[in-house]
Length: 383
Image (tube, rainbow, N blue to C red; front, side, top):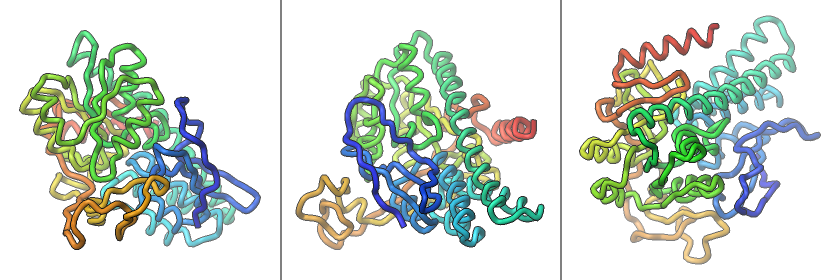
């Protein structure tokens, strides 16, 4: 089960609450999450004592973002092992919680493999649970390290493409510390530009229907003292037409073998706009987001979410007052309206200027380039 046990008023200082952590109170180990559905109004932690609670948190987006989902999946396996639940069954539940984000299944597989290897070596239940936890912690550390490297590689690419600094960056959804073991993916690049005095403006798409840009990216930008402006998703075209965008930076939930990129719905239209206006469109993601078993964009399973997220205006529970609809939000469409609500869209590789990973950038984006990058990633892992 999950309980809200800590609440912090939101101020202007950086949050002291990590997006995800492992804790071991007297009652037994738990996975503790910063509930992203409550932001930006308040910082509240969810305590997950079992895998069903963690799966629920994943599906309701209390915890979200491809890299962090991988970490959450690994800790979920460790939680099942430590509490004596069936690990393989727990792993199946976790891996299927959100089908598009490849990192989730990746993190689950790593922790399960560590647990299975310990069992095969004849270690007892506690030792095997410890092996799963150690693997989850290793993945957590690796993601933090990847975040630092991606920020450096991404800023170097921006400086190469846009000499002179003063970058005006448009971003979509949320790609900061809330989705990562470190400071994020695309947002980490913008943050590095800010810290080095090269960021002139961060344009933040509100990102309908759940407003991850307005609620989360603006929250992180404000806390870091960045110059940012929030805009509705359909206002982006006017920014491009006015020459106000120097580069688009987004994250990814799955990158196919041919370089097709699945990301939050609304990313593909930005890529089309960027191509027409000759603006670099850059994807920032760790190599763990690349899935060579998915050959192309058409093969990516796109998660379809409840229609109420479109027909109702969702907001943190403490914000809504009166007029609450079927899904717990404020109705904005007639009762019975059908809604099309894919969580992601897919951008073909020919619209992507570069994919930036912890190992460097791939540009132009081709299947061969992706394959070579993954081969380098395996070499680094082995060494």
